[in-house]
Image (tube, rainbow, N blue to C red; front, top):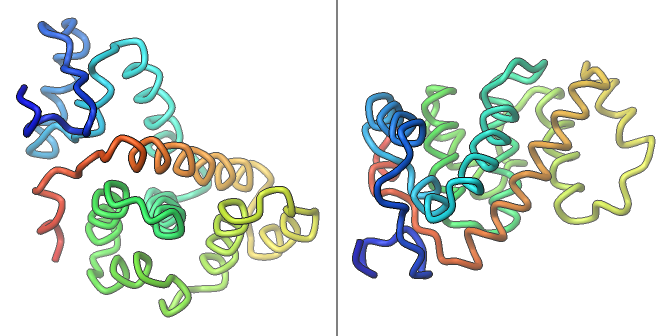
Length: 190
């Protein structure tokens, strides 16, 4: 890869050749998504780091949960909006558009989630994710109780906190390294 085609501003080329399991994972991405997300390429300079990242991401975003995939993507977008993370806003904004079938919802969440016509459950969830992002040390029992009142279980609250925490971390890494989203994300589900 040349500097112009690296997924970040850092010169950390992908391991070549990739281990067979990693190549298989990249092939699955190519088949399902039509691309290998740049975040995976960014981590592919160190296979152990890539494996740790994908294991956490896949568990939080794809594994069984009381939160739907759309709800988890909504959290990712709202956290990324607060943090102004270009990579995650682009990639996860596309996911919200695809999962919801509503391009306007994706745009509203990117700009200001409060303008979206959301049910109480989603408003409570996103307010909690926003507070974790802006004022995590101020989370108190009444914040968790507001989620319970909106129908979330304690396990769901765990998942909300972990998805928000994960994206707060990845937003910072993406911004610090100038990670660039794949061009394909920009046109998806519009």
